[in-house]
Length: 253
Image 1 (tube, one colour):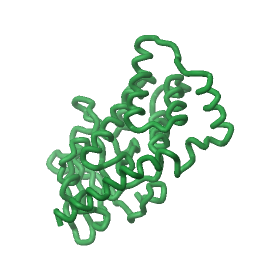
Image 2 (cartoon, one colour):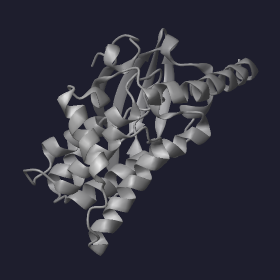
Image 3 (spheres, rainbow, N blue to C red):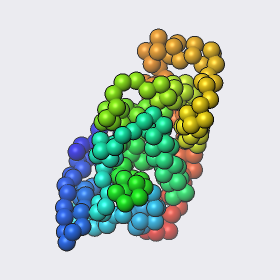
């Protein structure tokens, strides 16, 4: 699997394979050692952050071999294919994944440092809890709303139910029309689920609808623009994060 400019950084080819040893299932990936910072090596790969599936990292020459412990987990796409998912179910799932990504901020990992692809999300077969696969050196230039819409498209492509879903379309519209941060995206999904359960009617205004149709008439600028307002708003936070990581790396090195 080779990462390209879609992810904001090209750091070589990531080799991927599955292994099974003594009844334990592992996903094995190999990364260039230069892609793994001292902070990632000591904190993230040391399994300090509970949002990620357990990892075992081994330095092998110029590479890092990382073994993700997959026993008892399945990929999200497999989980979606095996179960019936309604619109509210998918919104709950989206909110849960966003909640995991948000929890990573406590470990100086903001959303652009975490893959929001369905292939990098795991589901526990025992309690249906979620875990993320951490990719060292990962960074995307895509806005959060673009990643969320793409995630919904990925889920829609594998779910059993076909056709349009009004609630998912509304969530998509709201995300595309907004400059929400991750907390607002979670709250919006949860509000729509609560509204579906309680049977409250659609509260969107005519202005919202007019703005949405205008965005579609201009070629979907809200979705395609890479350097959007969201990216500019978080740039200050990223700068602070990088300074803190630099300080931590000086201590750890």
